[in-house]
Length: 394
Image (tube, rainbow, N blue to C red; front, top):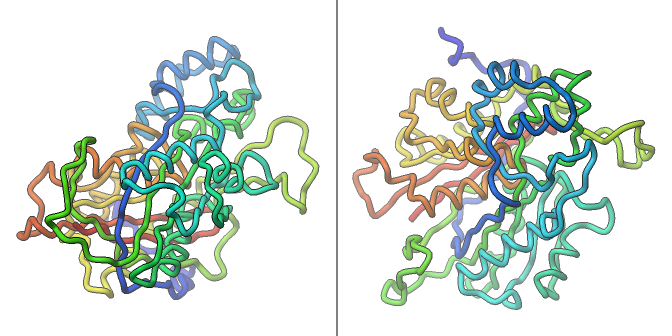
């Protein structure tokens, strides 16, 4: 047994819980991503830290960065000072509104047609009011909205709401947007006293991504026209949306300990993510295995998928998963190599990238019927050891 074939850890695997699975399907009407500013490469970012804060970075660039395989990312801040707010137009709700607006344009739907606006994030602009209120104002949306305070599986929880809201054939569409501006929860000064912060620093990215979910309503193929953005005009469907959470899970692998009512007084210095990388490494594969098992029970074999999108924690996930599950690496998303770990926005951004770049058809797919392609999305979250995902069909 090699290092990529680690068995599922117990007893945690025995408390995986019973997931909720939606057996119906919904239309994917639109999708889009909004990233703050130009991409910045790893070497350039480390040089900026070294220059502005007199922190040696060469060894970490040489040793840690290749293991994480994040080549570039987009950031909402400039790292000219230790603690910064996001740049104008790169704030959390602003990025979210940009992504939703782009997705609505792609779907050719006015914001007034939405039945609901759902946002999810682990890095809100403020604790109260919820960020969805400002997103709605920026969009000119006057309907109901809600913000889910959740990280990497926020998309899966939001889908459960969206499926319920669009259960009738004549239901109005729902917008979902995941957004993170986590780079501000970090100070370069932390690198000098907490070595684990190097991983946060080198793998994180900021951004937002949105989808528009519609009811199951068949569309006349003759009404479909080519889109100017080059994306496919074929109908796309989200099916087998599932969400599950470990019972009796270990302590959170990622958390922001201060800012809530338990610890309202911030410590001296900046708020930052506390990351238990040992726990995440120990249990992370189990969450992906749980998602794979959910789909297997519903007749979906990951080896028959045309493309697989695991949570993009880093650029190293794809080569690791290729060996762990014995899948050609060309059928696994490596989106994090270009944008870093986008947290709550990760899956939606990877979906947008997979569709617009047509990654899922760059290799000969295992499915013989090219008219029915399947892309599997698998989310995993260490904050509460939850898992979720769905299947994209077209």
